[in-house]
Length: 74
Image (cartoon, rainbow, N blue to C red; front, side, top):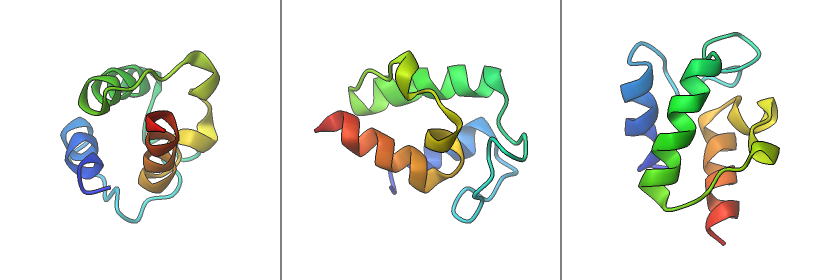
């Protein structure tokens, strides 16, 4: 998770990703942010996030994003 937080902070420096649990539900991240984030995650973690993984529950919190990354790395 420590590798993820700097990526998220670069995307939206004013958001406390360590505690925020409504990134999608509260419209903190929009579709453009998600597109950027998916590309950054794919590059940083050598994974391929497919369309089936781009759902709100996978992007609502840093923890949810990290869980998705870990599953895709396995």
